[in-house]
Image (cartoon, rainbow, N blue to C red; front, side, top):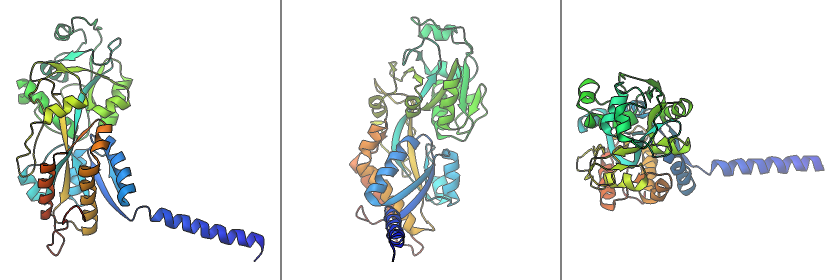
Length: 353
């Protein structure tokens, strides 16, 4: 063998070994889709879980509505949704549901000469803006809440979600609690006939539209406001205090949640407490109780178990509140016995799976 042939031989073997090493980094994979609300924490969770467990998680932030559709059709191994399903809906679709993370939804604005958390909004004024009742930033109702601000005579450009969205479901749940007219005329939903404004897809789309539109207002998950450098507001809470969206105020909002229903159905908006942020969303995991791929279902449960046990700090780093109540986690994981393979055997035994 000449020198050139030797280099080709050893080079080919080295490349083969390298490719084998890469292939062995992840020995299994699972697929998920849904909530864009939770997307900012899903990426670091997935990356760190893959390093720890050698299981690759492929997640698409396509919105809660689409996530529900895909997991119901068994097109993915799991879905994340900010729209909790009722016990009846879960039974009909043969799905299990449990909470995984909590975060803030915040109004964001693009208003000249108004700094971060300077503008105050009440729930009733916010509802009136989204109904098209308040159409200018110098409206008397806004000036009364903000006597020290020089609010411009700019038209308010309302931006809402165009896609089926759990963020919209939570936001409109909040508005329905603030305005009887909103409740009667428009109601709660993931996709609505909006009375005012223009639509954008995903938290990402709303964030970009607000950033690019002078005089605009939108609503996004808190991380998107941080990522895009958007101006957030103070919002009046149930205790009558004006508070900003931050980690401690989000935790205060859901601290008294009991999770008492069998399906863990909870909507955490307009909760009591002096510092509670009033628009808080819960992201839930949806899993088939009769999965076609038992191995993928088992790996998915490993991922969720890892989130509960090792993902709490990662959530905090990304301005979310993870489920960290040991008794609640024990209850949730005990409920996984309802997820069975084709032979009728429980897929999950314990955290040592």
